[in-house]
Image 1 (spheres, rainbow, N blue to C red):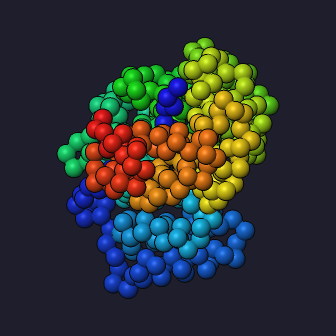
Image 2: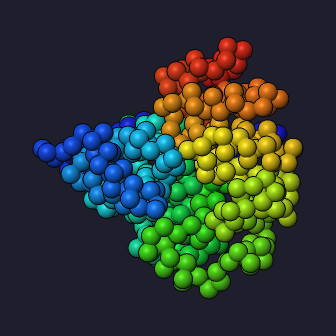
Length: 387
């Protein structure tokens, strides 16, 4: 059973478009981070505070320096590691500078995929959040939609980058179709290669379950039928294709955030899937999310995996390690340490999973070489193998 992972090289464009430079009096990234952590220490929700304060650095700071502040904040405040939503907001701010060049903004994503490539999601959602496209305009944009996540001159994304981007396209399709789910799913089918259709479909459904901005909430309000925690299973059953129903069910996780903090809750969440393949996909999603929820406390993640039912326990340890690596590729040792701290029975399988996903996460890069050099010797050749 090989899990499907859930799911760039830095490209400089002209200063008049997106590259934003330091102001003359700009503070260093570390001092800015200290200032922001001090502000947010007095607030109950540190994450929400960081998501408000760090985007305010633009445009007086460059995007690159803003992300360096994110890194410094994560170092100062170890409890804050999941920065995906913050990166969304940075992407929205950048694309607002020149919405017509949204495709060119995608490669500005940090080269190490910091914050699970949330910046790409922000660019895609921010560009079309306020627009509903008629059929003529939509057809004109199909070529852009098709190439948005593809490698091109100046950008050679890893498979993980491409998957994250394709997921973001699902969000985008919901906006331009005015929350028409069948139309959005059709766009996924028509603009994505087969290997990326699943993540695009998940992006479509995620948009209705995890609104972030006022326009997101307004979009949901316009839906004739809105799912709730109590009605989500009947809502998803309306989609007759198993892969649609499965994506609909697993993306409903925001309704069940508390349940996903326990092994039994995860089992209940993934019960009643349309087929065994969708059940596997559900556990992959739920266990990856659980790993992200506990990024600041690996002991909590390890404890949760001990509660997960035995058939899925190896996947839990592997998903926890990958969540650490995907959130920030710079320090792969943290993911490896997570595996080494798992029960002895599961350590090798956890490390093997990391070795097998190196190509997906890093591509054929020097970052991959550095990561694989840290993998135990007996798995190093497997990690270093080219795709």
